[in-house]
Length: 307
Figure 1 (spheres, rainbow, N blue to C red):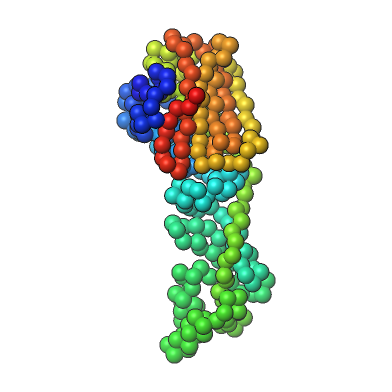
Figure 2 (cartoon, rainbow, N blue to C red):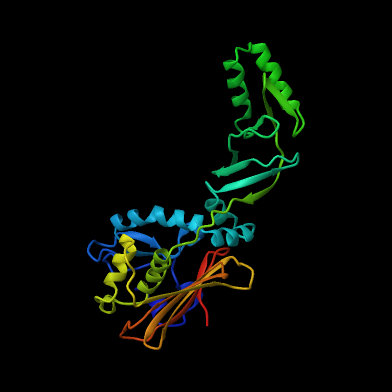
């Protein structure tokens, strides 16, 4: 374990971005912990890692965890609201996310980011035209004209017409089929209406707690918890969940805390300082006092304790 997290207040610069673990995977309790696990997932800007998982367990859980966080409606709205403050993290998060692309001419096709480019989905608009992604438009037009039997001269003329066309003007490519350029002025996220599961909340809380407790504290108490996370099976009844939303606007940092409360351990984490999730481990016994509050600043990429 890192002395920086376990032994109370420390200078900001002394908390590293990669922390030691126990040497054994905290999920299967068997294989060596030879993989770095993000404590709060990289998908939403997390960059604190620890050697907590084995290859097998990390691979089994990783992709599902990322997809679940991307699908969470509250997480997406919070991240969208601070995207200009955290462009690096947000640009990674928005990949494959669906949007409605609002254009100057009133068409609103659906679109998705692939890398840094916005791709408009293939669809037919009300006027019978099809919006085409700018990076693919000329290739698409040429292919359609070749398929319709157009000559090289006709293809050149039609491409020149398209290049010179104003945004929003329909360019007929073939009979009954046209393409138009769209000037996108605004993007609206398409929300899934889904929210992260208790299993994912428990996984994040368990990761945080595993930075602070020793293998001696782990005991049989935590084994059913690890199993339920790994297998998505029944969560032990001595684990209690709470969640809520702050009245404050989202901010470019995550924070988490661990404390002993009335014979229990409570782990709370706040995503973007606005979405609160708390997990209470009832009847959990430890050989030492625990009280820690940590901030993960997404802009400066610093991690530091707070009072």
